[in-house]
Image (tube, rainbow, N blue to C red; front, side, top):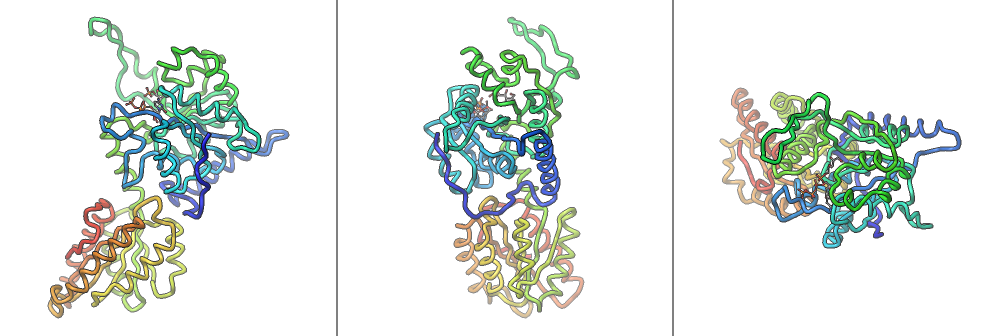
Length: 449
Ligand SMILES: Nc1ccn([C@@H]2O[C@H](COP(=O)(O)OP(=O)(O)OP(=O)(O)O)[C@@H](O)[C@H]2O)c(=O)n1
Ligand SMILES: O=C(CO)[C@H](O)[C@H](O)COP(=O)(O)O
């Protein structure tokens, strides 16, 4: 078994489980640990996860296996790993990948600083890949992690939005029943065709469910089932819960899962994943400025609030070497607007960029920074300031290497109150679309409101 590199410094609680979710997740984890601790002689439940990631994604119809397809420039599998590794009570995560993709996988683990990951070689079918992962856990080699757990979670590498709450539910149910899996209501009715391509019979939709992932098992149950099962099962089977039933007489408990658990299968699913992630990281904007510019910054903040319903807009001063700003960065705000008034230089924006670069915020998601410059276009035509403003391209190129996406925005700052409101609104619309769309083609561009 090959081990991924040890993790180093990175955001403590990586998203998309953002702040609001963290409290709920911690409470859920605490209840699992309490449940485990309540048992005589036990202090915590040993839980590991196996992630089959050895498929070629035929139905996706692109040359790259879907688990390695980029979403906001990061491979899909990294989001799934992130979702599992933020659950502190999952001690080991075993990923099954093909020999061909082993190096790719290692570089993903290193680049995104994933932790507690071990790699095994995938098999030619999903069941064989899972079995390889289980064997690695069963080996229980002395002084060598991972070790045999009491409970094992099985989760597809291409289901990135699994929440701790669901993992907790399947693990708790598996502890009690031996096996458990997430289910969803069927979207379409399942019918059975006959050999001539005509309808043979149709199943009553309300009586059936779609089997999703994650699933969890007492390790000994599922390992025994895989050891007992036939080559036919390993070749053509698609349901782990069925193996536990057939070979260990273990009836799985079925747990209602969330709609986000679907398996990324077709190309359109990648677009859906991208939209969900973009929405999750666009929920907060921090407006930063010098103390002297607080008035203008406040005006922009108010307009942004009315343009972007449901988005939290906070404002922070840059000059106090930003203790509060540091906190906002730690709390994983991925969107910053730096307000500059009557200046075309980037001193303040550079201060902000340095703070962001020093943090590890942008490892997992692109951080959008909009350098806003309020200029009175009558007093100072933008063309006069173009030379200094064009420096944005150089700065943007530099910070793009750290996954910080910088754009410039000129907002007209007329004396007339009504005209000012109009240009603020135009500016807010542009900022909103830069943040929501996260279009990498606009990096280093100078926009005018
Ligand atoms: N030999 C295989 C086949 C599949 N999988 C994994 O099992 C999960 C679910 O399978 P599926 O959606 O069928 O993935 P693919 O086999 O890649 O897709 P397709 O069936 O369209 O080829 C995926 O994470 C996939 O990488 C695996 O580990 N080993
Ligand atoms: O949802 C599942 C229930 O176990 C599996 O992910 C699914 O059945 C795997 O099958 P395939 O790899 O052929 O799509």
